[in-house]
Image (cartoon, rainbow, N blue to C red):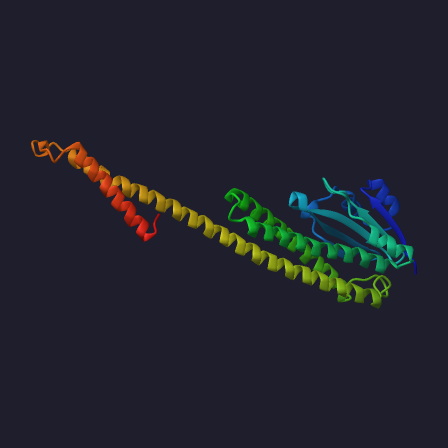
Length: 299
């Protein structure tokens, strides 16, 4: 049976009440009309007696700004009607309903339309994985020439993106599994018949793959962070080595000058205890130390 589809973009409470089917809980309409919560919104898909409520987050990488925008999409579905509520995130475009437009044009059922929405959102996290992998590769290429502050900032940003992507994928995977396990439906499997459940099973596998790829990306980022810490430790060792060499070069001349400055008259009144001799002694000891340090590879 062909479905009736209503698409709303940033609707008001009144617009929602006019589009939603009868019997929808007022708390549901308030949640759908609320401002987008961005990455802090938790995806869900649950039954409410005569209808199904879904809230999803579509991940959109913004390569120029090295960030991920989460676009919220809400849906209320009955066997005859599906209402999608798209919210415009700050500084980005809302989710595009094109997958549903194509399916609706050929008379798809509500279950298939809901599957198209879930599948498109799930596929967006494959793009998120590619974007994060690309950023990690860029970080690895420049970790030796970028300032430490820049590297730390990029690592922190990537950890933040990975954390929220993993949480979102995990929540979506749990919600979609309820369809695959036949724990979510309305009536006598009118919303999710067997063919739709098989299609949703493919989406579930997509989410599993995205979650595994995100775990791999997390391990790669941990390796990059460990390498950066080793680079910092090596640079600190070089600095300490340089300071130690400088201190050693200063120590012997200080000892010589201090010894010559002692008031041991008339021992230092002899001709061989002259300024020229002490200066030569200082220069000679310095050259000897430099040669030794060079031979040991310390400088």
